[in-house]
Image 1 (cartoon, helix red, strand yellow):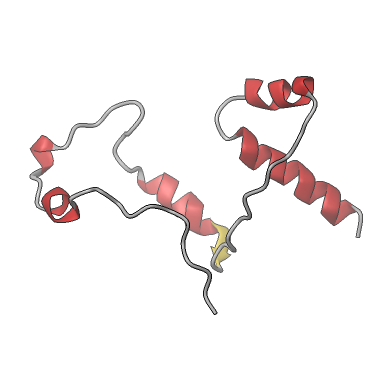
Image 2 (spheres, rainbow, N blue to C red):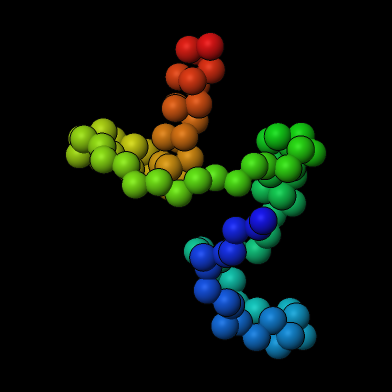
Length: 92
């Protein structure tokens, strides 16, 4: 049995968004135009295998450890996952 989604239904009017002329789409630093290399990196990263879903957890960390990861910039949770995966793989 499939677990129901916990995310709320989107309030975006997708029909309106799809019909927007390109000149009306506003790009910003936070929402830049999609770069082909970014899309390709997502596919090449794990080959063509689908990426399994991640689990959401609550985790208590020492403040200095969390601060260090956050100081590395965006994607700190992904880097934390990579460190944990490397430890797991090394422990096999």
